Image 1 (spheres, rainbow, N blue to C red):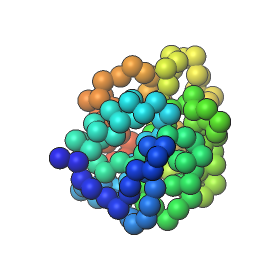
Image 2 (image 1 turned 90 degrees about the vertical axis):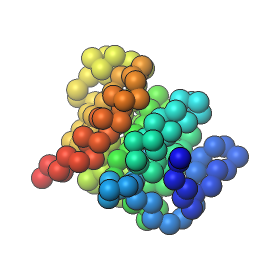
Image 3 (image 1 turned 30 degrees about the vertical axis):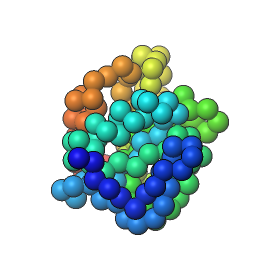
Image 4 (image 1 turned 180 degrees about the vertical axis):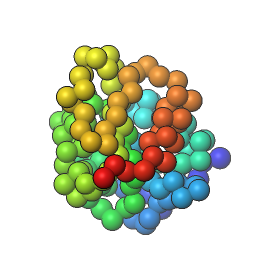
Amino acid sequence: MRARSRWSRTGSGTRTGGGIIRGSEGRGGILVVDDDADFRALVVSALAQAGFEPLEAATGTDGLRILQSPQRIDLLVTDIGLPGLNGRQLADAARERRPDLKILFMTGYAETAVGRSFLGRGMEIIAKPFDMATLTKRVREIIERAPRS
């Protein structure tokens, strides 16, 4: 069963609201940003079933609004190819307020096509398609990894 939070769905499918959201076992918050509602729902469901309490946003702008709030977010999981504010722009803007934020980019392009120069400190990439077990394992590893100094 998916844990409830003080976040509610808006008409666009984005979650907005207040309150500190923490994952189970002190894992902290995960924000999932993807413009594909069905795919985003699948990712959020998989993370919830793995014991996390993910937040979600449909656009980079909505994701940034959440990231600029006092919400505890330990990991941003975002599609690179978002319309408008894309995933990399979202990550860069988020890092202005949260310099140690860990980021996992999701992309339909091959990892080699994106290139390592695309990734900054604390940024990783996972190529679509991926199975949800692989995603949840990767998320757990990223969150549990100590930040680099």
